[in-house]
Length: 275
Image 1 (cartoon, one colour):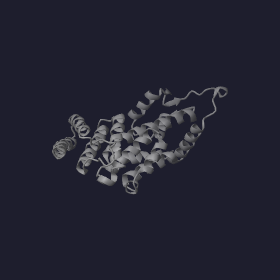
Image 2 (cartoon, rainbow, N blue to C red):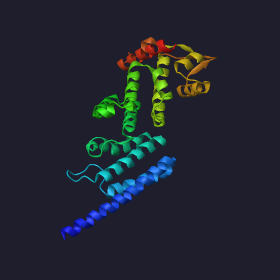
Image 3 (cartoon, helix red, strand yellow):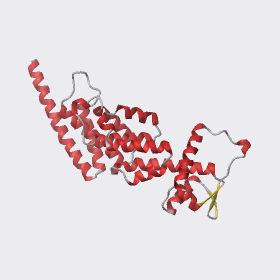
Image 4 (cartoon, rainbow, N blue to C red):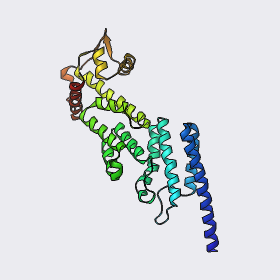
């Protein structure tokens, strides 16, 4: 009886694995075709199969699925992460990465490294920078294997973090123009939007008046249309081609926080570079 049960379970696992392989291969094809809607449906189907076949962490000790099943699961979650970027859904990226991460950490010694691993690890680090989660950025950086830490993708993100610390915003804009992979575009655009907001806030604090051309140069914008978008967002008042910033009376002004002082110092350094 025990042998019969064991044989039945083995056949069932093989059938589940074959079905999973078929679905993940179909998902790969949809991803390559760029059909995000079809990808989402395939991803949900794969997740159902993975849960049913118990190929989703955490795993019981000495009860790991087969190496092939683990690699198929990793592939499915990797595509789920990449599709979330195509959909420009930051929350979905974070949720899918949390499902994928164990395959890059505790299962690394079992299934090795995938072709997409370093790229996705770099993207996750960039997400943490966008969210201003600097402590988490360094925690995740410490978790990386020496191979991942030394990869070109991860080093590029480390350079971006250093540029942020130094206030070298022009360097970050150049990094956006020379991304290692198109998937970096979404998070880089969010990061640059945050930087421009910081520069705009610094302009409001540092100047009583500022010309349209000067503001466009400081914000590192290429077109008047982009500049006008910022103006509408910030509700800047213009007199002719000059912006006038209203400041509180000195008696009412609050003592600036250390964060503000550090930001202004970084902004001053950048002014020296680009003005």
